[in-house]
Image 1 (cartoon, rainbow, N blue to C red):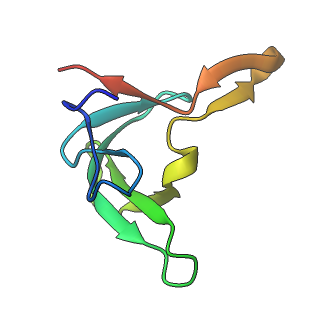
Image 2 (image 1 turned 120 degrees about the horizontal axis):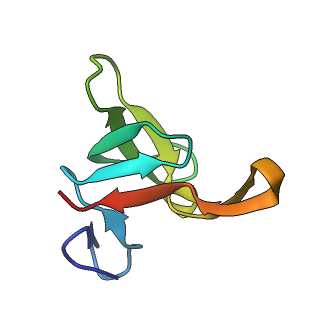
Length: 86
């Protein structure tokens, strides 16, 4: 994992995107990670992120699906989020 864009809250935790990093969604919009949270029932990590240029509540996505490979139009394999190196 690249420590410039990922971190581990503790050594036993998964690598999570760092707050303040920017990511492009496979459908086009860009987002900034604003933090992390734990699901109150499963205790799984959630990534909190907000769409760039928009005001409102952040979105939350389970850590294990953050940058997974998905199949999109015409069965093309894409990463859900890709880091944007400013």
